[in-house]
Image (cartoon, rainbow, N blue to C red; front, side):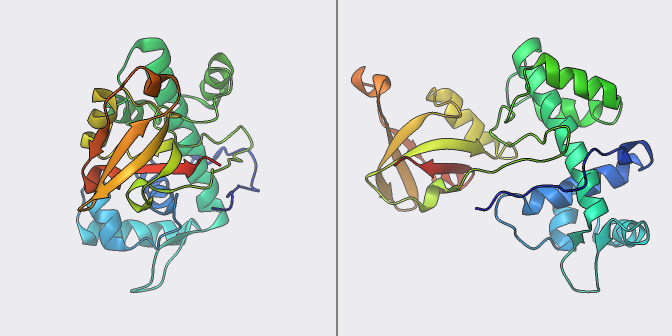
Length: 239
């Protein structure tokens, strides 16, 4: 995947947008983040837990604000201004998640809702100082890239774990925090973001992993992941 960056620089849009507009912009970005998928009104409604008519009204408002490009029955796409707003909110959210895990002892399955509440309340100064305090992290606890102060960010070349053939060694790059079973499976088997594993088999849609390196030498057991769990994980190939 080619890196996607923002050329718009530092965002102050969060001081003028409503909380709902911020949430919509961030969600639109997130739905297309890793694979560039088209974002539909129904997908947006499902993710946000709102009705289709509510989405229609909000998208119309965002179009009037110059934040989205949308035609009837066509996918929803962020404009440059909308992308800038979305990345500013992504930066806030992921820095807060990282802070909650590293310094307040939260589990990575607990941080999303807490970050959702906090991201709208903190100032730009707080976000910048949090970034410094954390040592300018490149990714959040789930492996999602964190935009820098200039809103630029890079994505590794990845693919879904469920699509990797057997006998291939991979590095776990990201897990979808909207799939609790995926977080639980990684916790249960002690597989963190950044771990290197080998796909030893694919069985009826499930993926079997074996540890490599020191963990392998200690005789760790293989990990069997159902298809829906492997589908929530992104990996890069180890060459």
